[in-house]
Amino acid sequence: MRRILSSLLLAFLCFVSIVPAIALAQTGGQPSGTAPTGGQPSGTPPPSNAGSGLVNPLNNIDSLPDFLNAILNAVVDIGSIILVLALVYTGFLFVAAQGNQEKLSSARNALIWTVVGGLVLLGAKAIGLVIEATVKTL
Image 1 (cartoon, rainbow, N blue to C red):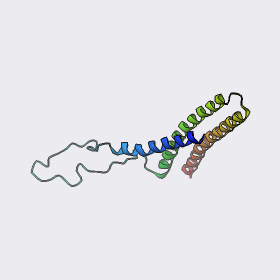
Image 2 (cartoon, helix red, strand yellow; image 1 turned 90 degrees about the horizontal axis):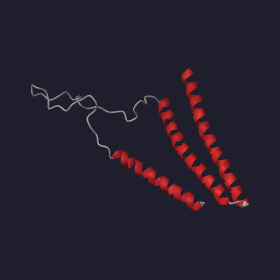
Image 3 (spheres, one colour; image 1 turned 45 degrees about the horizontal axis):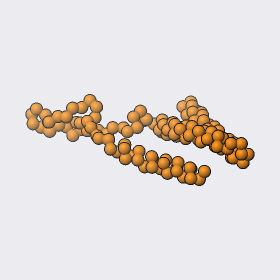
Image 4 (cartoon, rainbow, N blue to C red; image 1 turned 45 degrees about the vertical axis):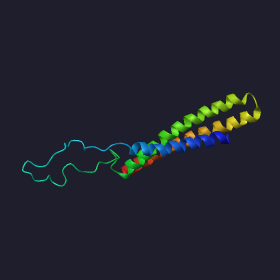
């Protein structure tokens, strides 16, 4: 059990450490709607703000509630994947128990805590939606 958990933790940490490197490997480019220019026809340089600008990396997120909602959605998405993997692992524990009462008890415990984790995940999303609705009505 410890070996499997430590292997899963190691795989997760490797994944988390690789993802930023992949994201940082993307090339920049021209902001949309602008074309590279060689200056003005009269030979004067272009205005200082032409072709430059900051692009919002968060796309449509313009406020703190939207940002927190995006974080909560990401946590729920990742947690859902972990929940499915935990359910598969729990099923494996039930199959591997083969009638052994001690192992069946351990598998039942794992199933109970997996379901509790899923309920906590759903509860976090529900609480987030309730808080968001309350703040918007104020």
